[in-house]
Length: 189
Image 1 (cartoon, rainbow, N blue to C red):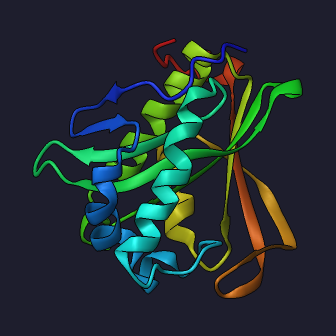
Image 2 (image 1 turned 90 degrees about the horizontal axis):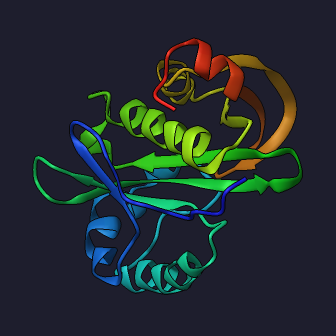
């Protein structure tokens, strides 16, 4: 595994890059303050931009660690930071990652999150050298599962009462992709 850390990735409609402190206003306005966005997440909506700024002040120094992968999703269309995609758990001993993501409601349904997830998976398989990339969603949030499928992950199964988010204890649906399958499907590695 190569500890290359969070590097800038460009897609057709997005620039995925490290967070900066001046992203706090976009982050707060576009998704962190929205209870509908955070409904199935493990953290509550931010009550004010100061909390968002405090979180970014915690994240930004972590970029010095090559094992920290956390991207701000910047829209090429309007220049705003509209979401976040990150490795929430890195399992170095098996070269695996568990992903998490969220995006402002105004940008839902445009295919932006699958575009970002696929680009990050290309990077994590090709540059970092991971063997497995997985993600899970609350069974009551099937749209998140469609993001995973569109990005090339395969359904693995449902773990009953295996997660907890802002709705309470929930069943979790797991999807994953393996490096050898990714190569066979023609991804750029």
